[in-house]
Length: 326
Image (cartoon, rainbow, N blue to C red; front, side, top):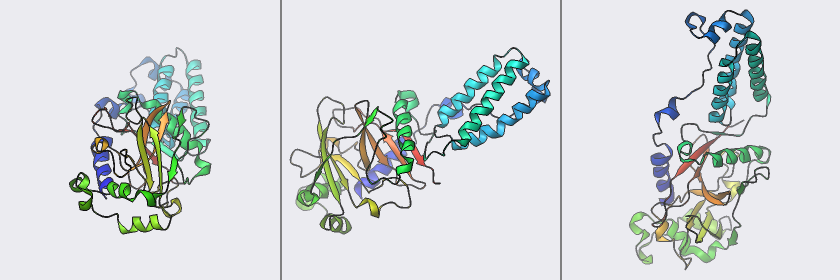
């Protein structure tokens, strides 16, 4: 399908774009101290005290276990760096003991907490530089708050995360918009061709439409943030019950795009930079982002920047989330 291959190319090109070296190498110290190489006053103080040395060695395995299950590894490692800063500011053994006990308690609490369903993938975060990191944190909180409700047949946001909201979609009868759906399946060669040259709707998709398994919605949304609303359409190729693929969140073979005024074809202004494999649109403090599916295993989804057009400026992948199977 045109929309699948187009999305995969964009995901590879943009979601895995090279990041500044500092983002790849900035990791928090986790290993216990090598007292043979201790060279700071704090390190020497720890190594000279049997109890402090014991506490130091207890932190390392707990840190590694907690890091493996942390839903937000960047936040987790930032917490470790802050802890090291606090530890290194101590002036005596009593202070060090207190700091170590506090860290051990925090790590043990994290390990005893319910396992998250989703994890942010640390190496795919251009938003660290672009300032969009808060949307990733809130989407992560929302999805992990919905763990008990998985699988989802419709995208949801948790009421515990008020910054997030969803469009008010109006459902349409896909049988009445076959030309529009057919246009979604055109290759670049036929996309701008006359209708008589279009390739037909795939037979399995047409069968789902005729059997009532496929669904179509539309909503007027300002997806390119230019102050004017576009006619956004969302098409589910098949029913949710047919598309779990062994995963625990909703994947319905969705495509999301902008239709022209006739509702017979897609708006060509948005074709070149559009995420046609989007599962839905989500709002963060009123601004639109795309929820995309990368088709991979283990299952992942992404939050992407707003739709591109000839008149707008759009980035792509903001952050990528991996489903953590039980």
